[in-house]
Image (cartoon, rainbow, N blue to C red; front, side, top):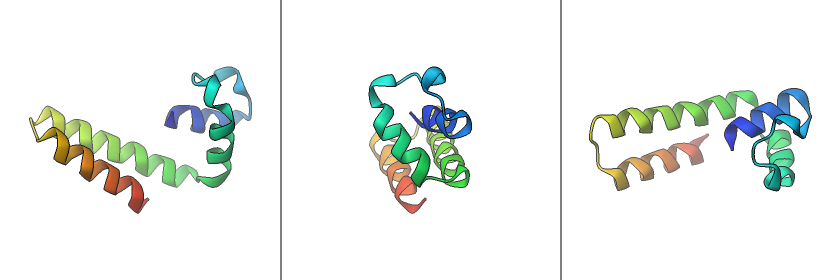
Length: 72
């Protein structure tokens, strides 16, 4: 979904969007969110992935990731 927001923000065209059924939400979020915010969200997802690879607690990792999203 984040990928779709970045693609739409970059080219303003729905042809590259995977989640076409969510295009209205994608358009709104593309207007509201900066590239910096989107990159921070991607970083939080990457941190969660690394935590999962280190066998961290699933529930705790998801919570930390979601809190990180809210801080962005």
